[in-house]
Length: 168
Image 1 (cartoon, rainbow, N blue to C red):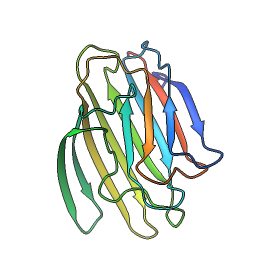
Image 2: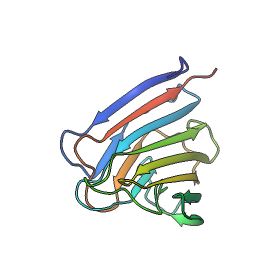
Image 3: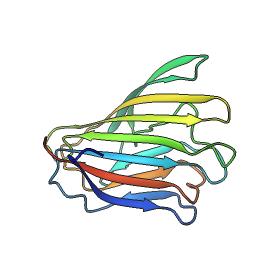
Image 4: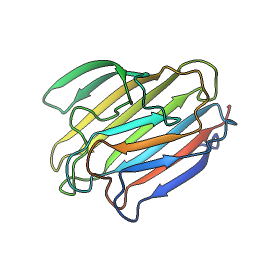
């Protein structure tokens, strides 16, 4: 990573878990980047991201998706989370681990928080790509991030690393 990135915390699951949480995020950076290598433990799940334990309908997103044969887009408002991989979900052990990144801009500022998520999935010979722009309608600084499986759990070996991005 460039010298402007500073690792804040890393979690690697030794056993399946339904949520990965990053707590006590310092407000000393300009932006955050989360790198998440993930697979579901038993069934296909959808990842949900929430901030500061807020599960109210304060999130919205717009996304595009492609798999080499088709493309689609979608917009959702008044949701209880941001969903970075919505069209196909994250599959179980029959697929490879999925790579997701979540960039949160001006996370400690006093305006609504925007996030850009990217996800790539190898589906054993096929693949998918999604890009999502999310909005959290809160002016609070982000000090907690939850990565939750919509059903089932994240598989052992799932890793998530949170980086702080320093002002360049």
